[in-house]
Image 1 (cartoon, rainbow, N blue to C red):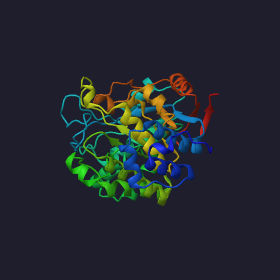
Image 2 (cartoon, rainbow, N blue to C red):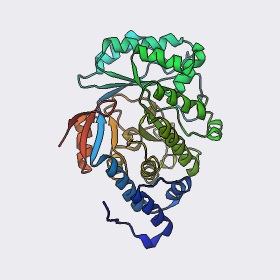
Image 3 (tube, rainbow, N blue to C red):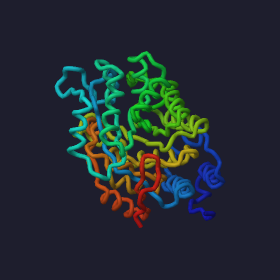
Image 4 (cartoon, rainbow, N blue to C red):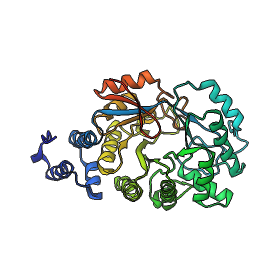
Amino acid sequence: MTTALWTRHADPRMSEIADKVERGERLTLEDGVYLYESDDILTLGQLANLANMRKNGKNVYFIENMSLYFTNVCEAHCAFCNFRKDEGDEGAYTLSGEEMIAYVDQHINPNVQEFHIVGGHNPHVPFQYYVDSLKALKERYPQVALKAYTAAEIDFFTRISGLSIEEVLRQLIDAGLESLTGGGAEILSDEYRKKMRVEKAGVERYLEVHRTAHQLGLKTHTTMLYGAIETHEDRVRHMIHIRELQDETNGFLVFIPLSMQPKSPKASIKRRNSAYEDLKTIAISRLMLDNIQHIKAYFINIGTQLTQLSLTFGASDVHGTLVKERISHSAGALTPEGLTRDELVWLIKGAGRTPIERDTFYNVLKVYE
């Protein structure tokens, strides 16, 4: 792929970055910030598409999965969260393994490959509750992979149990844990976390949980929640934190930019990220994270049509069927709570790409020609 479509004389700095991308050279912090500040979104998209095509060709991945939430009771009071409850609040709940199994039995279909499990940091139950929750699911559905808990939840488990990160992870692995979810990263900046009252694992702790998981053989996911008070430099530094850990461990499967949602579905469009900003973030993620195979377009946050467009802006994954997503919707997401397999295949084909049904670890289950 040697023919470039971008106009080099229009912007010497963009031409310099384009040359780097064409040569496969790593972009710097300054490069990433410049891309955010540029209004040349078409060249940015072309560069991200080039980088993605080199890694994944026209393949776009999805999975049949279910989102499960054992509890919404949480000790943290993060400024952006509308999912959490205090114990005793109206709508607060903590499900037993049996109650969750009853819910899954009612909603599962035979094609589900993965349970995506996250929830509140509930200090009113012991660590063993979280272990037993996984064990109950694995015993009932041994064929379904358990992608469970964020790095922030793992850190919380160390505090309520007195165990180390490694000891917590080993117990969860013994109960059936196969991968960690990517949440809890928010923006990897201590200043941001203080201002946004992110009352959970700090920057180094988040990275250490994933580092330890990778050392134990787990492949994990990672996220970035953008669109609050952070600067463009904060976002790019976040990506570099992840890139550096990936250089060290090669344990991340995918990077997931999450567009922050307002607390009410009735919030004006001025309270939401623009489509322009969402596409930029996906494209810049693809260009900065040269050592991570996949960038995910999360339709729950950016909508199905923008997800489709993002497939030419560097994204190679559209997540999955989900079934009853709650966290983003409690914060004001206007999108569907899930999509069917047929809808995901239609969405991908509509972008001129090849739908690939995968398992948790990106093993190919079916190619939809």
